[in-house]
Length: 220
Length: 351
Image (cartoon, rainbow over all chains, first blue to last red; front, side, top):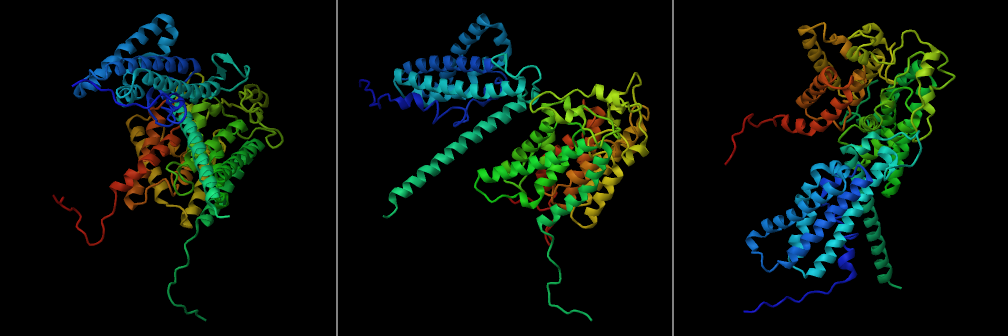
């Protein structure tokens, strides 16, 4: 029996955009919270982590999608992990070579990208079922969404916690830094605040939509 | 003439508003002493903390389209208690932030009054303790001359700026022998080469020492707390258990080595132990409800306070001990369920 590709939906802008907003890995799906909480104490760390994760996400999605018909179902998770670990090793060495400072700041969390559930989740639920280009577009959207979320957290924490943004002082010398913001509890506080904002916006949008629906169906 | 009535003869239990208002009344003498001791800075501190708490609660009620709940006075209590645990010269903007975080994070997020897992005032204080570790341990002397006409310089710090330094101001007003430390800090870290500086216990009891705005006078807090206990608006067993726990633990260490560890009475009357025992640990929502659980809870907090004070990095441990007790109280309630009348004490597990 010859292999017959399944009919697939075409790539739409939504394939890319859903990862950024509607299915944002951090703010909506609440995946990958370990690096989100741990390394967002400065904007630079957040960007570094976001880009590293995006690279691994792209690489692993490419390979998983390419090999999706060759990997036996029974050992797929192990295969995905091996693929992800390969790209994590590349990122690990690359950051080590490019910026020792960033490497030290991110510490063990670079290696821990292996265990980031955003990546495994994409491999399992998307790349293993879709064509290469589609998987790549989706992975890029997710990566950008993840980086965006880390940036949201990192910038707030850096501004409040050290009074700087990307290392540049914002408020002058007399600013009182909120020490707690660059400590782990600050990560939880800021994550919680962003989640609150997102669900508040979502609820408001739903309420608005419901009201409009009502207005349309209202008699008269 | 005897009035004859049919049952029920029990009058209605006090409502939440009534209890809360009574707690506010009992806190007023403590506030008054605080203002007498630290001057208008303490007054401004209490005012700002209360306004911040009320404002935050009102704001969140508006945001969630619910009728405002500021009328039940519980936000006022949170504000007063918060201010009483802060240093008298604490910058007002930080106090406002503490009030906001306390109410927003510990109260409205959990569903408002009756649902708070932790004491909101202590959550607010814990937040500023972690955010501004220097400002919250900058103490100013009690009974400074001119305290009713001039503010402590750090009080009016511009929002988000570093607190105005107070070292020179303290030197200028020249209070004899003031070292910028509370009795607890003196006991733990010593002063000028002496490893443990003891403070007169009678002074501690009356409240003649430096410290947070409203925690100094153990006597006054005891009297005010007793009023609440007599009116049955507070469970007297919680403070009793907490004080017993602290006293016995401190006494144990004091008996082992009187030179290294402070006397148990010092432990009771110093720092925020009395205020915490009377007004914070006894928070009706965040404490266990079972009769045995109340004792376990109080003793746990008392023991933890002493352990943190003696072996922790900070001189004061009441706040963390109470927050820990709050966290443990659902568990304590669950394991200390009283036996239902008529059932066997030990029921064999039915397979």
